Length: 237
Image (cartoon, rainbow, N blue to C red):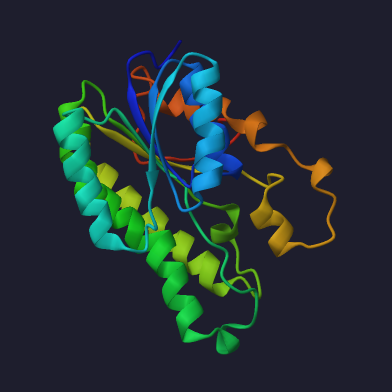
């Protein structure tokens, strides 16, 4: 029960990595706030949490409706008065195509979710993270930021922007009780990977629930590092 009595908010919690993190946090004793667009998926995670005697709150929310993030911050402030753990997991691939062929609407949506929504999460929840005894913010990045991968322009650029934002935020909170870090989970057998590489055997890649250890480690009060980009093995890049 490494996260007993902690309040943890996980975005993209209706499936994939987000659902796996939420379930694991519940296993570790946290009250999990499940944020996602797919109500049925959120309900499945909620059912699991209840089955183990845990606590969760469902929040159906499209994070591209940025003002709704502010509203959620106010609701959590009134109900809990703090937020111990924030996991910015929700993201979208966009289209894999040459930069010159990216539709403006696809570019804008990719940045709206992968970048702007996470900035709005920080804007809304920074005071609640500071109100916790040891606020922990964790954001999911990708190894694609480390090389120039043809056709991955929108996704790579958005994740690179996210990394820089979190690195700067971490520097700004360095003397507080809050820590903010990024995690590259590597190639995981998710719908997004299947979308990016159709035809690949997903059984050759770790399942989402097999990479949750590092998310628990990053959420602990004992984890003191700040502004780092880690991989799912726990090793720094």
